[in-house]
Length: 135
Image (tube, rainbow, N blue to C red; front, side, top):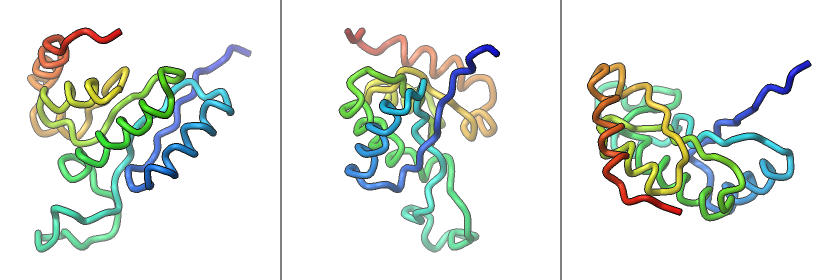
C-alpha cells in the first residue's frame, strides 16, 4: 500500500524536559509532523468562571500561551527535522503569526474559526505574510 503521512498531537501540559523527550522520540520513530497542541487540563484563567471547574480539556484562548511555549520548545529541540503544526488559542490573525514566529511551519485553526468565521482566515494569512522571512 501507499505510505500515509502521520502526525501526532501533543499536550501543552508537559514540562519542557518531557516535551524534549517526546521530540526526540518522534524523530527516532520517523514521524512526519507534530501538532502542538491539544487541549489543556489546566484551569489558569478560568477560575471562578461559570463551568470553569468542569472536567475535560480547555481549548481556545485558555491554551494559547501554553501552546505557543510548546511550539518554541519543539522548534528548539527539532531544529527543522519535523514540521510543527501549531494549534491552540488562535482567535485572531496575530495569534497565527505568533505561532509561526515561535517556530511553527503551519497553523491549525478551529475554535477561533467557529467564533469569528471565515474572516479569521484572511486575518491570519495577512498577519503571517507580514512577518519577516526566516531562513
